[in-house]
Length: 95
Image (cartoon, rainbow, N blue to C red; front, side, top):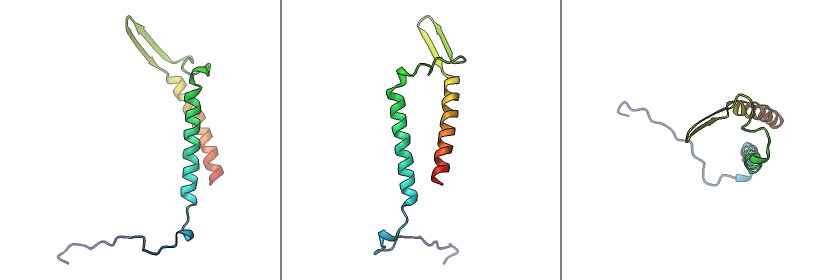
């Protein structure tokens, strides 16, 4: 009407049987997010006890007077590679 296209909106109908709906995708997301949060919590808890984190060759540390700058570039790259490998294995497992 009046040159305006009408859109239809998909809605969940009242009386939908929730037991027939597929919640496997939501369950997988919850499991993966819980595993990620648990591993992040363990990493933060044991951060000071892991001997090489933040002290790898290539990490940048500049100190001049009262100014200090620290950028752990190699540590970030190492953590990124390890997380990439772990997440690829986990996603292949859940596929």
